[in-house]
Image 1 (cartoon, rainbow, N blue to C red):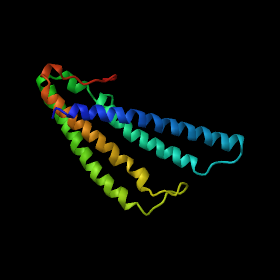
Image 2: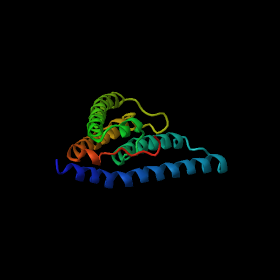
Image 3: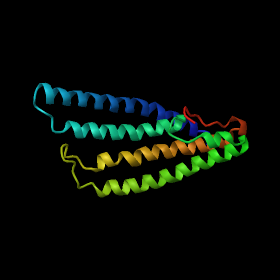
Image 4: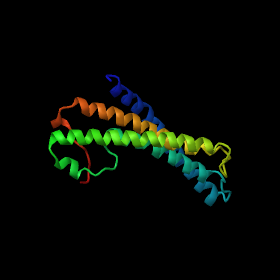
Length: 168
């Protein structure tokens, strides 16, 4: 259990540059698409599809980072209004529920992804497994972060438990 926070840090160190590269690649593909379509009048048939798949992968991977840092969408007005001891329990239940949901999404996402192996994308002609794998991979990363946060909450005193949000 002592290694769980270090696993989270390794995921963070790997994912931030990967998400950045995916975002930059998407940006460059869209810029190329605009240049080729409107300036050179020779549209690239694959650029829109590639940009879409890069965005999906980036969003699925970034969801893990958002969850780990407490920046994912959540309703915190209720949990911040309850007593610290109950807040700790509620927060642990939330992380456990997220972990269970992500486990289901990982399993079903892999099942669906591999069912689509023979189907090719229209423009890139890659197996649809590639874009569909973004969901179970992202869910797997969220699952890991939820487990890390669950055990972190377990070790904290009830007064240390806070849920961060900008909107309440």
